[in-house]
Amino acid sequence: MRIDIITVFPEMVAGVLDHSIVKRARERGLVEIQVVNLRDYALDRHRTTDDVPYGGGGGMVMKIEPIARALDALVDMEAPVRPRVILTDPRGQTFNQQMARLLAQEAHLILLCGHYEGVDDRVRQHLVTDVISIGDYVLTGGELPALVIVDAVTRLQAGALGDAEAPEKDTFAEGLLEYPHYTRPRVFRNWAVPDILLCGNHALIARWRRWHQLRETRAHRPDLFARLQLSTEDLYLLSAEEPQAPPEALEALRRAQHLPSATCETETTVDCVEADNQ
Ligand SMILES: C[S@@+](CC[C@H](N)C(=O)[O-])C[C@H]1O[C@@H](n2cnc3c(N)ncnc32)[C@H](O)[C@@H]1O
Image (cartoon, rainbow, N blue to C red; front, top):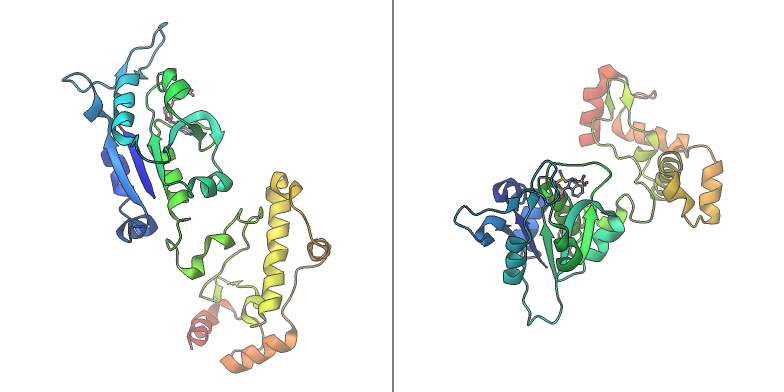
């Protein structure tokens, strides 16, 4: 996949693309990302990309000509499929995981970062295929929104994540928020990891995780919850108490790790960590 980001602040964007999973995906050739300086397509020697608004009012408006010239340079008219050209704009369709999944299947995306008061509206009317907002708030420019889109789309490219981090387990993947995660130490400041995650019964752990996903989604995202197709098991889980580890499994675990019978106390955190590490 190829992604071009058109911006008047290329340095602001470039740094972010050189880290973590996006960097790895670029190195592996899963995604080719080019940051395009819009000023390179300006018409005058001052490399002007904005002008005062017609009709008066404060602020500057990004000019259409440099944008049109940049797009002409980036779009391969011979290519069988035209790129999706995305204008970042708070008036656009709100970005979500489903849009990320659709965009991730495209061969070529071009992201256009607005600034100042915004972009000459003829760009929106004639030059782009999509107008995307990343949420109901106004940022100073389209660079952060473009990076949000690039990040979400890149991590969905096949091979971008390790198997263990597979995107199908993510929040929103099935219309549910994700379950809580924990890692060592087992007890920190008397806050213990739920015992069930240590019991080794994967079917039970899966039920506990599903129980949390359903509860969290119902509590925090009633809009998502209303769209769920709940199974009989889901309906049962929603009415049930939080699944617990069977006492005998926990006792066996404690014996195997030479832990005291009671849940670890703060003072025993080190012992727990050591035991967990064995
Ligand atoms: C200061 S904003 C312009 C806001 C515009 N005057 C308005 O009220 O809708 C400048 C640029 O930042 C970007 N931007 C700001 N907030 C955004 C958001 N929530 N989603 C996507 N892009 C955004 C857009 O590219 C926009 O053209």
